[in-house]
Length: 168
Image (tube, rainbow, N blue to C red; front, top):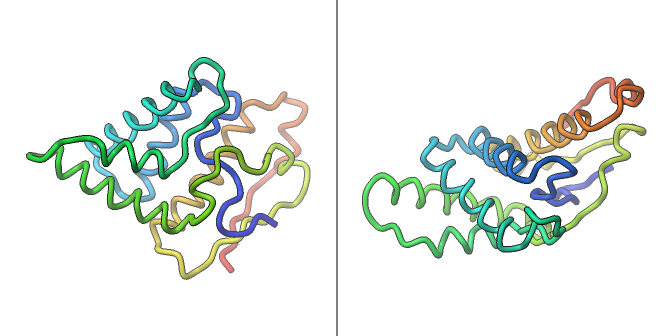
């Protein structure tokens, strides 16, 4: 059982190209929070910047945290126009995500989920979480499993026949 808040880290690219993973993670946020594409650009920029600063593109495992993403976004000085609206929306949503994740928002490396395809796994999700937080969590679990499956040898692919998300 994987309790709430999620016990893994969001920005660990799990063996795929970090740039591709940062795009996937930003797209999950777009789907969960209803971001417009202008907002998505700021999030991709933040993740890429933190990957670069932390050396992730060069093999480091010092993955950024959601509070670091929020700190980077707050450091951007855009005060007028559509970009300012996109940025304000993004900061508000990421702040809500950091609050909802609690201590898990600060994880650089969490539990290793690579064995979830070998056993029955349950991912708990509280019903009192905001709908966009629930969508983010569900999409993140599914994205993680699909990404991980893409890295498995063909012989192991049959070990994860399906995924069931249950709300308790």
